Amino acid sequence: MRGLALAFVLGFLSCTGFAQNSPLSSEEIKAILRHGPWPALWSPDPSNRVSGKVLCATCHAPFRAWQDARPRAVGLAEVERNTMNVLNVRYMRWFGWDGAGDSLWAQSIRPILDAREMGGRVAQTAALVRCDAGVVAALGKALAAFQETLVTGRTPFDDFRDALARGDAQAQKDYPEPALRGLRIFVGKGNCSLCHAGPAFSNSEFHDTGVPFFVAGGGVDPGRHAGIKKLLANQFNLLGRHSDDRGGKSAVRTRHVALEHRNFGEFKTPGLRNVALTALYMHNGSLGALADVVRHYSELSADRLHSDGEVLLLRPLRLSAQESADLVAFLESLTEKKASRPRRGPRRPASNDGRLRACAAGGPAAAGRAARDPLRAGARFFARC
Amino acid sequence: MEERRDALRQHAAAAALIGALGAGLLASSPGAAACELPPGKRLASGNVALTYRIVPAKVAVGEHFEVHFAACLGASAVVSGQIRADAHMPEHRHGMNYRPSIAASGAAGAFRSQGWLFHMAGRWEFVFEIGGERLTDSVRVE
Image 1 (cartoon, rainbow over the protein chains, first blue to last red):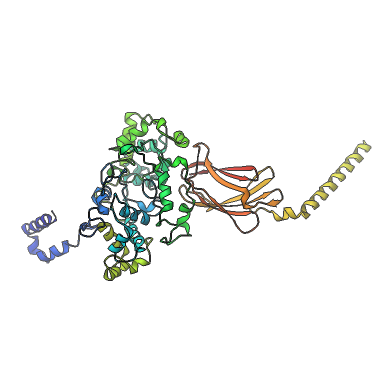
Image 2 (cartoon, chains in turn blue, green):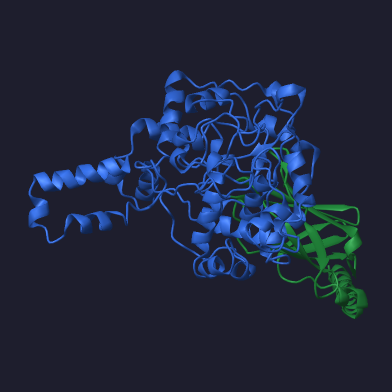
């Protein structure tokens, strides 16, 4: 496809006489065009991966808003949960539907070592990057450094919100009226913003929203309850020896998280930015469209909620058809206009580990490259591991 | 009339004497001097008094914060085993997702509590349980 496009461009330039008048030769144009487009997509390298079958990008596909558009993720086998996209993950406190990851780097290691996802082992993964087992943590940190750059762009809602903040009534009129009506439901009678809070539209915590947690084969998905247990048992958590900040601020959440019976069946509040691009919805991917999600909250059965607090907060909204459409319009306004591929955010120092300088993919030569550009190393890992 | 004035004068003098004696006793009490509360929001119930402050001063939804507090049980500084500190949303009937830790900090009866996080906007209620007393205070988080 790319070659066809290039031939078309060159043919067009030739037909219009541009090529003859241009100081650039056709060979030079070819060479220049190879430096784009930017941001670049990358091609997963199937020869270099953990299990030989599954890549990070298998489930977190860049062209599908960094998820897979399946109800439930399929690695080496199908799992019980929907793939969370990795957009705006740098703003989160917990990772995964059950929050079993307390850092983005720990969460990045998890699927690599999960038998049903990528099927790696610590020793095998360490061998892949040609260093000791401790570098698996550094691998996670490089992956995190890359994912921290995946930030969605501005949306119609942001323009409206900022116009509101500066009192620009004229600019506020650009925001569609249905979206504005939906926004008022979102922050008003819908109570949506209690959990979908802040600029990322997530409080990064866990709730039972009445979505069934029964799974195939008659089992149940315990959600946050099991997530906390996994978190505390994980050698890669923020209290472990691989963390760069064991006694510091970032470990406060792990040190103080409370395991309660009510955590059973709770799942993480997902962020809503670019939500129109991230179907299917809910932790089990059971809802196919935003309208279905709105219907879920409109017709919610309180009998399916098991927590006193959630029962008080979540009542069926009983929205009219117009109100439901308005709420969907608002949710769509949280999606950037040109969002076929999320923009990269600004580069910033990631939670990188000094060991990455000594131990990186591909041996000493690659280690040198990774030391100069850990972000790029993370992108390579993401595409290859 | 003159007799009544004399009686009032004697009563006032007696009251002043009792007041002065009482002040002297309090000032010389070693317990009172050992349990002075630092500046902060003051709560009291029964024979328990407490001052607390939040660090940082403004609580933001979804951000961890600390509570620094000091407490007196009668005239004595409170020791750590006598304290429980938590918070909840009365209208929502749920608490935090975190269990704060409490550690002695500096002067006797002073504590630093970490791990607090309010994950929703609305009214939260701090609850301090000390020596059988329950001290509460509400804050609204936006």
